[in-house]
Length: 147
Image (cartoon, rainbow, N blue to C red; front, side, top):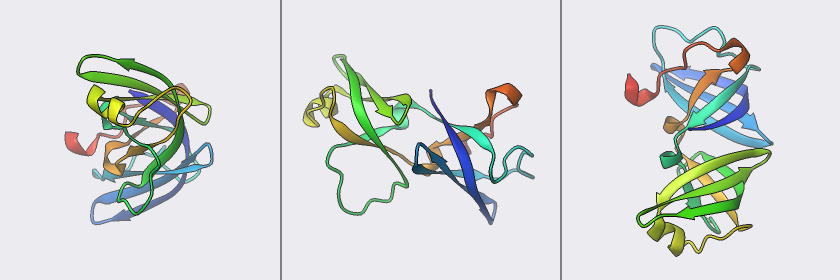
């Protein structure tokens, strides 16, 4: 799992759906959550929490241009590539954080990934879930697919 610290900037609720806008390393991120009966007390504007997402949910783009519906676009630098026969794990530096993407080796080769390459990491907002800071950790907000 990828974990990056974020600061909640805004929370918008409508029809049982919650949009949480956050910042990390001067980059905006969003999470879409399906609201339960009520939000946890720690999920508030100004709270420092962690955004968590799977390696398999992190896509990579090279020279991204044009319009795209993905809200989360993280500027990254490729740090390491571990190629297997079918799958590859690409380690990326986002600000001060190391995150990983699991993509097919075919895709890694087609993108011509190499160490030092500037890329954009892409994550759908509904694939990001939030957890309270480790020092006061409680149960995470359930992922929309788990509800």
